[in-house]
Amino acid sequence: MKYQTSRKRLDELIEEATVDCYSEEEEHTGLLTMIEDNLVCPFQAKVIGEKVTVVALEWPETGYGMMAVCERNGKQHRVDITSLEWVKPLPEGFEWVEAYFAWREGI
Image (cartoon, rainbow, N blue to C red):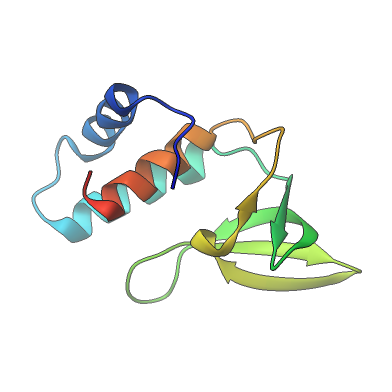
């Protein structure tokens, strides 16, 4: 993934979200909390090339990840946040999503 945010800034965000964490699970929770607190919904995105409106985010009941609640043609669908195709203008707080992706990739 090509990032909009600088590597230095991503490292700062990851550090901010994980500063008091003792395990990978706690780091994951810290990053998802920052996304939930900072990413402004609704926003436009694409899923398999189709325009959708992301109206909310949900944590999975188990495991890693975050689900995007997408609306299209009056129906709601849930997809992993990594399945979204991000379109401009990017939503406010998007840098936190990039930090999460960077953390998952281990950069």
